[in-house]
Amino acid sequence: MSSDITVDKSDDSLNRMKTAESVFLPISRETFEKLYLSPKHPSVEGNLRKKLGNPTPICLMGFLLASTPHACMLMGWRGAGGLGSALVPVYIFFGGIVQIIGAIGEWIIGNTFTCAIFFTYGTFWLVQGGGLMPFFASGMNYSPTGDSFEGQQTEAYAATIAFYYLFLGLLTFLYLICSIRTNLCLFSALFLLVITFCLIAGSFFQKANGNAELAEKLQLAGGAFNFALCFPVWHIFFTQILEAVDFPISLPVGDLSSVIPGRSQKIRRTAAA
Image 1: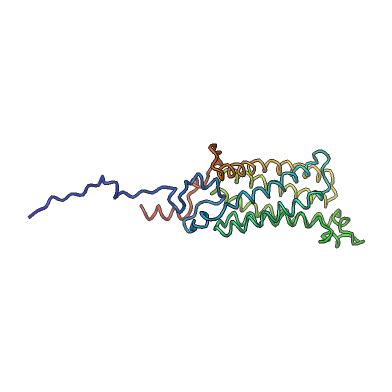
Image 2: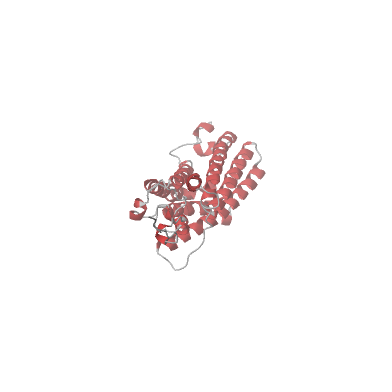
């Protein structure tokens, strides 16, 4: 006895479909990369992202309102200067506190990479503002009279603070490598930020060497790169605000998450092969 039972392999219900959008969120990868600065990761559950607001625009807003005028100050536009002392409240509240609050939000919803970034630069602006406040007296030990602001003009102070900017540049370089898995705008901003920190470090080193003219030129160049890096960040911020209100116009950010496949993606592809 024989039976002519055949299996219809054309049945769509039996086909296995794999899409980039089916990782863990019911939104497209392109939209996800606009709303968050971290690539999709299958080990992170998305429930909190559905219930809580997106903290990324908050962090970007705080960074921009501190960094953009700071860049103008470094370049001395319209006579701006004084190490940005007039911007101390801006550094502390917009640059520092706003980014720290946003970083906590990124941590809550599981965006580890952006959480690290915003904690880093939020703290940077707190340090930037705190260093200009008499309360912290950061230059006191560099002045024979104990005058903090006088000590900040010394060569020893300049050489010391230069190392701080140098290692900020190193840390930002590590973030830059990781940002290859995010989007072109963030990668561009971090690339320019690495150059900015290196130029500012060089400016302080030259000030420590007594070369005031070269130090001023390096500071001017650092301010120019600082101003330039704000443009892609403004673009990301505007893109996310448009997405937040479901605006009919959608701006690209240059998704790079699929250019270099993640380790988990490679594992899944190997298992499926």
